[in-house]
Length: 235
Image 1: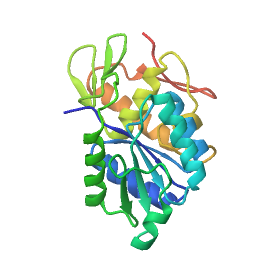
Image 2: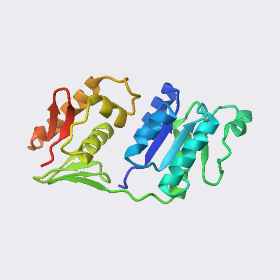
Image 3: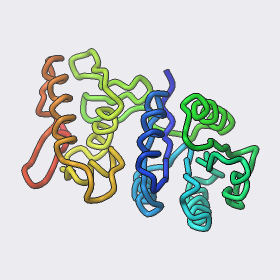
């Protein structure tokens, strides 16, 4: 199994974000969702993306500035998948000037999973994958991005759901720190600041601890500090 592709979806339409996120996760990818360009910029502060998905509702000039900024920082032209109005007469008028048919793609709204899957596969196949670390290692614990598993110190591995994987990756990349539930909701789940409930984080942390306990590993590798947040033990 190859590493997931990381896709950034930018749309002010929450319903579209939810549909696209579910479809891409079902296809085995790693979507980040943002309701604004400013939110997307914060999500990208921790790393790049393999594909940018832009809703036609994002202002064309703002979309172009954002694309040029991340293209400059990544050292190559990032492919873009546009979510365009369903009317064929509107598609061309809603595409920004930087759109290139040989590099970019279009999926009409409402999104259909098969069409989305085809376009994502085509665009990713046409672009060499950026270099990414396949593993995150903290002491004897290894998070294997390629196999979507947590490799344990005593041997064996834990299979993780997509969100458990993203949560552990965020915590392990900052092992020894404590990250607030609010920041995790933004970084892992893609919620805008001030939205989402901390019970989502608590539930996923509890599930991972249960899996660790069942596998004979210390569940307190995932730590909780009141008023500070959650962390992964550094040793």
